[in-house]
Image 1 (tube, rainbow, N blue to C red):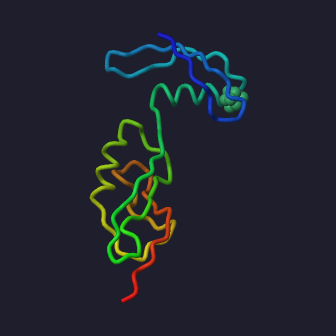
Image 2 (tube, rainbow, N blue to C red; image 1 turned 30 degrees about the vertical axis):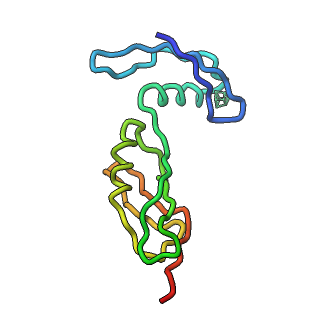
Image 3 (cartoon, rainbow, N blue to C red; image 1 turned 120 degrees about the horizontal axis):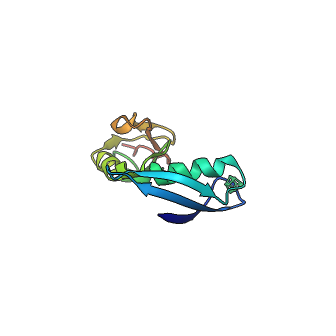
Length: 127
Ligand code: SF4
């Protein structure tokens, strides 16, 4: 099988022509990559085809804050196939204000090696 993707590692945006096979276990194995101007393109093609990773952004509920939600994101890519599981974990969380950008909201979410961190300050309401 064959697929073309655009390399996003640098602004050159090389078109990568990828030959790959589907194994018996449903996994993909890249057999050749053409069109890459440097080795990083081949690495990107193999990663994207065999074990794609993504960063995700969402929000968590906040209690006692000036806003009801704080935006969050992963601080490292996670396997694309685990996005739904991670979003379920994020939806379970409620944090108490104040929240500061950079606060770790979930450490090493699902053991995937990425933390969920706040990307926005939410001040506590004055009482
Ligand atoms: S293959 Fe290399 S030169 Fe081409 S876009 Fe990717 S990183 Fe840049």
